[in-house]
Image 1 (cartoon, rainbow, N blue to C red):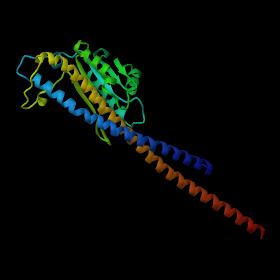
Image 2: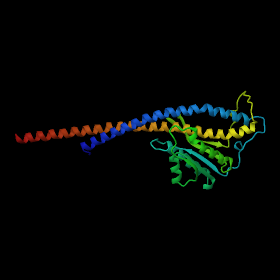
Image 3: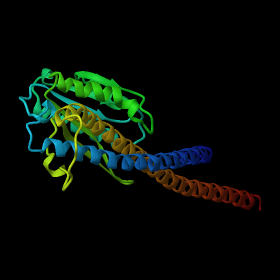
Image 4: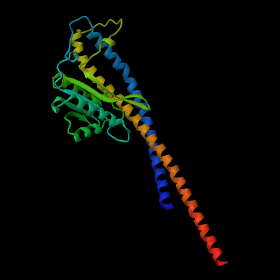
Length: 286
């Protein structure tokens, strides 16, 4: 059994840890609140650009674009959004498990796919397993702006336009609530299912013509989908961090209670032993 000194040291150490995790929980909660606002604030822009693109794509003209046309899939790209740091519970492991299982299921050769990693955890995962990577970005801000992701997003979309890849998928954690995040995997390119997003009773006037507008708008739309997923993922990351730190704080509190109970019992046993020894010594002297 541990000595009273050892138990006291463990209690003090756990109390300090509890203070740290409690502070980290508060920081994560603050970051999550702002990240949630950023993600929700981006939705109106994304919805509007999607509406305009759908309106042009579904018009009764011969307007077309390579990003709207399916082609034989010879190579697939997976854009994976993870965090740069740990202490976020199962946030990263769920995403990376989905990526690995998808690759195992869909591909027989490394020539058939490539990974674009956003976040150190995803980058390290791919490096460790020798998965092919065509691009990566590490050290993303807690509250990223479009400029932080613009170059990578633009290069990724250009890979599809140049025919280097035939399909682009994104895997990230979708923010549902502060206590719920859902791993989401969806196809970004080619762009599909625009019929459901076409504007209703909206007559747009285009200048210049629709084809030229679509030429500029579609890459921007694809880039906005990547940025929107990043904002969504960041909100999920901070929420997962807050939940993990709250759980750690609660566990530390329970451990302190258990150690304190053990310490008090050991202290009481030591006092009882001392009293017994004193009583025995007095009895021996009589």
